[in-house]
Amino acid sequence: MKRLFFIFVCLIPTIIYAQTIKTDVLVLGNNDAAYSSGLQVSRSGCSVLIVTQSTPFGLEKIKGTKTAEIYKIYENVQLKGIAYAHDLEKKSTQTKKKKSVKNQVDSIKPFKIINDTTIIALERSGGGWEAKLSKDKTIKAKVLIIADNSDKVLSHLKTANLKPVDLSALNYTENFYRTTISGITGTSNFLSLYHLLISDQENLLYIDPNNAEIGQAAGATASYAVFFKTKTSLSNLKRIQGELLSHKLSLMPFNDVKATDSNWLAIQKIGITGILKAEIKNEKAFFYPEKEVTYEEIKQPIKDYYYKAQIWFDDNKNIPINLENTISMVSYVGNKAIDATKTQLQKKWNSSYKFSSKYDLKKVLTRREFSVIINEYLKPFDQVNVDKTGKVIR
Image (cartoon, rainbow, N blue to C red):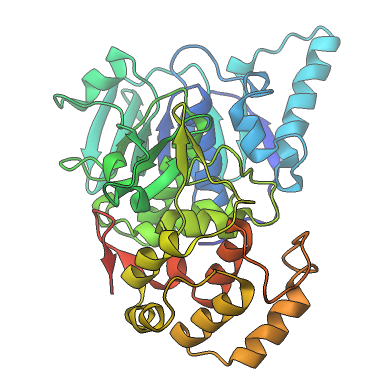
């Protein structure tokens, strides 16, 4: 998806002069999920409009929240406009002008917020949606995200049994975890793309208004439908996962591997494949990146991904998973030259990979080291697809 390199901000009155406002994605809500979904849509290169219908959405509401943590609102150079708008409000208060947030629209082109505005009707418009603000003023959007659980909003949809998305608890008796588009911090729970999608409602996403991580996942999913001119039901799991990983959203809820970890991306990708599995303790998921890898834990998962791995494991039974044997495996399965692979790994070991250990062919690898090597030389996450149940498609 496109990347936004320069984003500017302006403040305009909430009075809407145009008869029809067109946007790619319309978000209804005023909490963390609404804001994080809007930011993700904008970052993914699509226009977005957030409409709050009750309490105005002020920038101060996100300071210190998970939304602010995810996007580093006050530090990210791409989003200086938000901080600038916040500073303007602060100065306004200091000079006792008392301009309330509800009398402004905070705009990061193409990101806009309209505060304290009632939606009087929501209707289908072609493949998208039309929200009526008054008799002669409407918003037209290709995808609608509802991050608001008020009865008034839901009643406009005229559909029964609409519920926010269900979360799944991480377990390895089934492969559904491979369809994750968001891990939930501090838990072992994750959101599957296929729980976010509503089977009989195209281009409509309904989410918990208080969860910023789910909001970000919804924003990427909505953007995919817009960007590729398709329906939400035709969402591409790998593309959406890749987009979210590029914006540092943890798809696997590993409690002990943060996004600041230099090997976070590789660990996330290998975690999603299930080649290395987490341990669940007290309803939290732990990856244990410094724990040594064992032969038994990787044998079947790698064979599930690669036909050639069957032969390698048959020829190399119950051996230690040290660096030398791992190079042998990735070279055989990935059709790579062993000597060239050794040379590349030695160069990158401490400089690129930031490993604290020394390059040693006889060293049994940690789960961190093994994840990085498998991710770089076999690329199971990037090159092997899964179906809607998470089953590997070879």
